Length: 81
Image 1 (tube, rainbow, N blue to C red):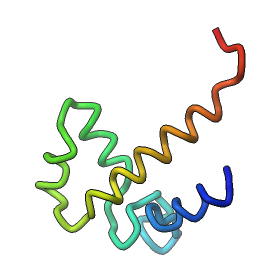
Image 2: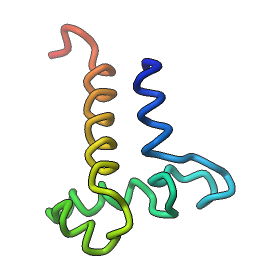
Image 3: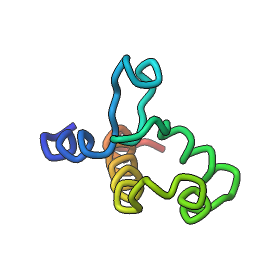
Image 4: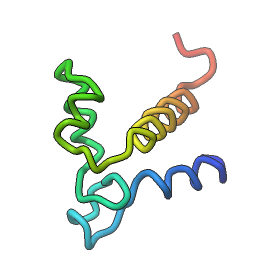
């Protein structure tokens, strides 16, 4: 993970044992990032997620998804087939 990615991550996700027992949550909330993943896995949209959690900024969701994509791609070994 790059320094830039760590900086972005700190503004998007909080992992703190005092908040939801260390479950990764959107910064400033008690909403686990897994909740967004669950919404998307069931075919719901970001808008549907925001209808339920309107206090999470859309930009924070997009930053999380972009960072997740980048980190996933970095973990795929070169020459994977």
